[in-house]
Image 1: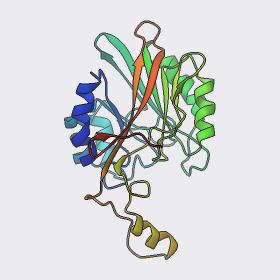
Image 2: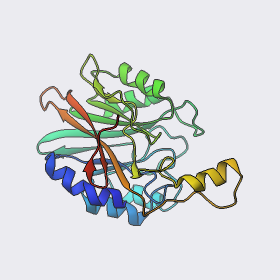
Image 3: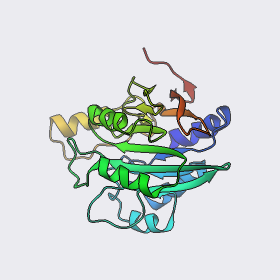
Image 4: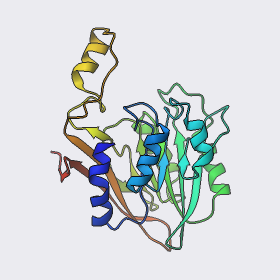
Length: 251
C-alpha cells in the first residue's frame, strides 16, 4: 500500500491518466483485501479495483462487493453471486468497461469457462473501451485468451504471478496485451514477501507465516494504455517500473 500511495499521484499527473485500475486481491499484507485498504486505494485515486483467486480471503469483502460498485470480483467464480464481475462507467464521455476473470490452469478455484464467461460479458456490456483483468497462473493461457478475443476488447492485462513479463504488445486486431502486469510491493522479495521468511516456511517447514517487509525498497509495476476513442482499440501499451519512486529499466 505504501508503494502505491507514494507513486500513484505522480504517475497519474505525469501521464494524465483518465482511468486508474488496480488489482487489489493481495493489497492487505499479501492476502485478500480489507475494507480499510479498499477505501485507502480509492482515496489514493484508484477508480476501479479488481480481484482474483484470493477475492474472498477476507470475509468483509462480501459487504464491500455489494456496497462499492467499482469493486469487481472474478465474473466466472461458481456458487457466489454477490457483487459483479464487470463494471461499466463513463470516462470523460467515453463508455469504459472493466471486467475480471479467473483462469483455469494450475488454479484451485472452481470456475466457469473463461471464454464463455467473456462472451456473456460482451453480450451484456455496452459498446466501448473494454479492459480485461485476466487473473491466471499460465502465461500461455493468458496469451490464448488474448488472441481469441483480439479485436473484441481493448486490452487483456494478465495478473497473478507478481512478476512483470516482457511481452507487452498490440495484437494483430488491435488488442493490447501483457501476460502479467507485475506487482506493487517490496522490490527485494519473493512475490512480495521477505525472502528469509519464505525460505524458512517453504524449505524448513517453519511455523511462522511469510511476512511483508514494510522497510524494503518499494516497487510499483504498471502498464500505461493509450486507447483510440473511436475504434476502442489499443494504440500503445507501455510497461512501467518504479522503485522507491524512481523509474527503473530492467536489463
